[in-house]
Amino acid sequence: MRRARVLLLLLWASGCGEGGVDVDNPLTDPEDGPPAGNPDGTCAVPAAGGLETSASPRTVVGDGTSASCTGDAVIAAVAAGGVITFDCGPDPVTITLDRPAKIFNDTGPDITIDGGGKVTLSGGGRTRILYMNTCDPDQRWTTPNCDNQDHPRLTVQNLTFVDGNSKNETEYDGGGAIWARGGQLKLVNTRFFGNVCADTGPDVGGAGVRAFDQFEDRPIHVVNSTFGGAEGFGNTCSNGGGVSSIGVSWTIINSLFSHNRAIGNGGNPPQGGTPGGGSGGAIYNDGNEMTLSLCGVAIHDNDVVQHGAAIFFVSNNHTGDIRIDRSVITRNTGGSWYTQYPMISAHDDTPIVVTDSTIE
Image 1 (cartoon, rainbow, N blue to C red):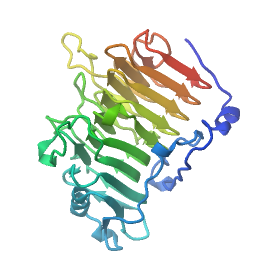
Image 2: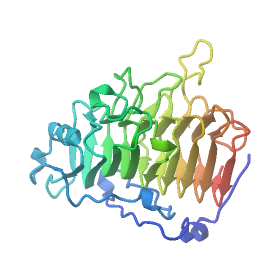
Image 3: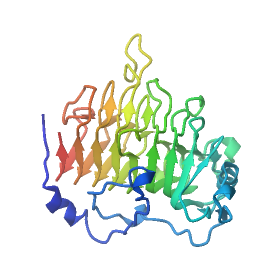
Image 4: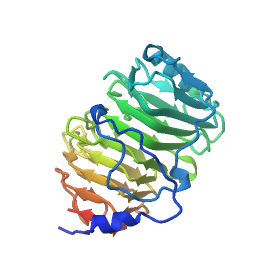
């Protein structure tokens, strides 16, 4: 077993550099599930990962009462685009959708959904919650290069996603809570509890988030966010209990992944007689020329059947790399194919740079 250890109180207190953007965390009600983010993560947040302004919303969902904040109102607001906020009264509110809220590609270019720390969007255990796809003609094509366009720039902040379920999706599978292709996705102060996608399959994944084709291969920023966080709150899919992607880079800062599961069986490609899957308890990355960057991240108590109890990372052309700084990866269980570090499945020539971190 190979270890890279850290004295957390000394090193995390120093942050991940200076000049970062402060990101407040309003999701702290202990009765509303684990808070957003890793409480021990103090890495600085770059400007690209900070909160977006919501001062001038295009749509305010609700009129000050919880009853006015309906699933239909959310779906209509997301379809209209721009900045979306909520006025659902003084108390936290859960809004249940009966179908996904879908982004239209010509309603930005900047789209921000800000729950103010009091809004939970639920799929009711029946539907995916949020969908964006620049290459879906039903959502209106806006450029001839739908797989590499700079919009919509979608920011989801101060929101909780619970009980999303994409098991009934066939064409665009995975992504129990959020499915996103194209443009640019960012998550700040978000939480994902109890979301699910297909139980089996070699490449389906992302109970929390499934992502493809970010503009110019820029990374998705995930800042101060929680996937699972405690027993009974985890997310489950064939692969990627937390997040899953193909050909996408991620910059994940001060975030927590715990109690998520990858429950498929047989890997990718699937072993004979198996349906495939079962890799990436927290994170599943596949594709080429991608980087997974973690700073101030805690990954623990996730579980897999096949590979990558914490992280599954396969760069098909052997050009990708993993960077882990001031993070703790521990107590993840199951799986095999651990060539460099425990709980991380990757080719033995994949560069994995670990600094001031614990992996054991």
